[in-house]
Length: 301
Image (cartoon, rainbow, N blue to C red):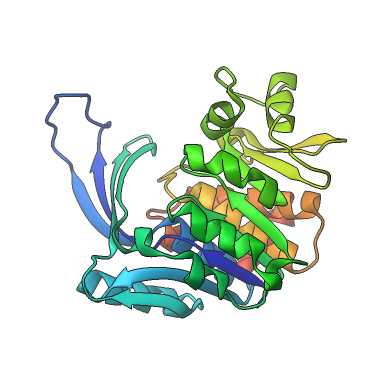
């Protein structure tokens, strides 16, 4: 396999609202939809749709939601042979408010995602790139990164959502992917809104050993990449925004796909930036992931 993803698999329930509710407020939604989601599933679908042979390690229930999710993953070309089905645990779910401006707020119920064990994760198949997130237990992530088959592979941690357990995993990864909020949390920095020397310094503070890189997604501004020796930015592409849900996952999956093909980190970041830009113009998370030809057309101008 080119890409192996360890991560969450969720059924996404999306409510379209004028703007997310404030504390104590009751509002009406003007639409409700059901989509395949979960950070692991989203990233696996992104990589697979972009042409990378991709396997997903995760867990779902034996409920209807689990069956529905596996069907969608298979349809997208993801190898789900590493997904466990559990009779007594529900499939993970996410409840997402999407505003008319395309911004979102999300509440996740982990369900089966929280049952992944270090033993199951350590039995991952060989791959060129391993990518994980923090919607599954940290011990399972550590087991993947420490497994013999991952010794020569590129190990990516998308440290989202920002959790205390994420900091202990930093020495194990080769590439860390965070957004502005996550970067500020892990670095103990003030608000980070753009690409600046302060952003570079905060990212560099998370590097724990030689050879590591930190990739900071900056929303519409694009993405920045920081190593111990250099820093560069890839400008965002102006795109119509329908729904930003899953855009970060699209970036992660696309980056993994290109790195699995032998691309440099700079080349992969440019490619993934374009893919994420396309994804925000579509509704849903996994369903918004673009095809390889679409991304190459954007890059070709």
